[in-house]
Amino acid sequence: MQEYDYHTIDEIFKALESNTDAVLTRATAISKSLINKYGLAIEAEDVFHEAVVRILDDTRHVPKNVPLSYSIGQMIKSICHGMLELNKEKIFNQSESIDGYDDAIAAPTTDEDSDSDPEWDILMSIFDKDDDAIAFLAATKNGLNKSAIVSSIFGGDEKAYDTTRRRIVRNGKKYLKEAG
Image 1 (cartoon, rainbow, N blue to C red):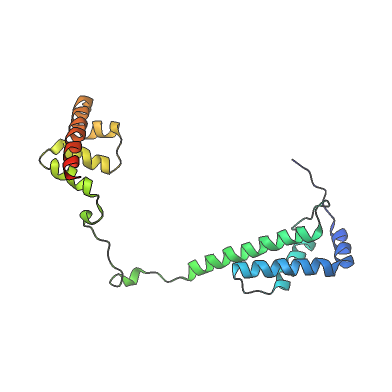
Image 2 (image 1 turned 90 degrees about the horizontal axis):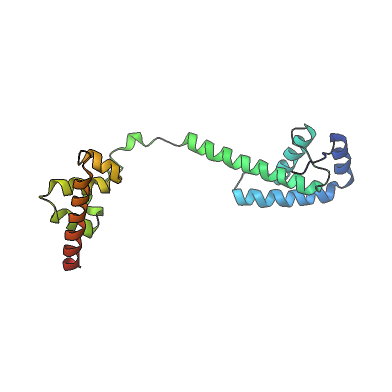
C-alpha cells in the first residue's frame, strides 16, 4: 500500500493563492455537476468553500502527489454525497406514518389460489385425500428441506419420506402429462 506525504495547511494556502482561478473553475464545475446529479439545493461555490474549510481545519488532508483540484473534487463529491444521504434521512424521518390510513390501503388477499401455479393446483387436487402427500407438499412449498420434512412429518422415518416423494413424482407426472 502506498504511503502518502501530505501538504501542510500553509502549503495548501500558498497553492490556493497561486492558482485560485484554475482550482476554483474546476471545483465549481465539479460542484455544479454533482449538485445537479443529486438534486441538491445549494450553490456550487458553497460546496467548494466547505471543502476548503475542511482542508484548513485539518480535518481533510491533501496528498502531495495528487493534483489539488482532484483532491478538492473528491472532497466535493464526498460533501455532496453526504448531503444527499442527509436529505434522504430527513425525508424518511419527516414522512407521515400510514398507520391511520388502514381503510384506504387495500388489504392483501389471503386467497392462495390467486397466485398459485396451475400445476401446483393439479398436484394438490390429485393428493387431496392423501394426508402424508398433502403435508409433504405443504412443507415443500414452505421451503423445508428433506431432513426437516422427515423429522416433522414422518417422525424420522426416511423410508416413508422416500415412498411419499416417489408416489408424488410418479402420479404427478402422469396427471400433469394428461392435463398438459
